[in-house]
Image (cartoon, rainbow, N blue to C red):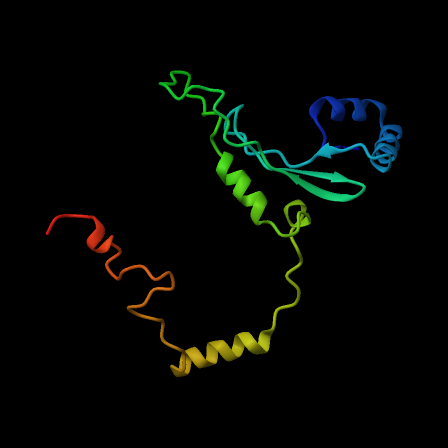
Length: 155
């Protein structure tokens, strides 16, 4: 029996004691003990990560505390990552997730609608597609992408 979502120490203990340990883990989960199953990418010891924890109440996301200025920003000869590395990414991703269970396991996309897809292909072949918007912006920025009269290069 393997325990892929557990720490190496607990996994080794579980392999040593076999099925009895699996039952013990099930009882511990029912009792409210938690285990982090999603760890951050291994890009250094200080990398901030988004953790998903399963409890009897459901799945909960834990975002890192940001900013973390415990490590100085001067020259780093050990080539290790800064303590803030990945902090904003993990926090923003955690705040955008509507259902924490989606981080645990993705949703089933359901059956594909073949009739709708075939109709779209047929409209494309006949040239009945809608043209893309041109010369407009959904964000209201200037067409040149510059700062207008308030800054930028001198005229």
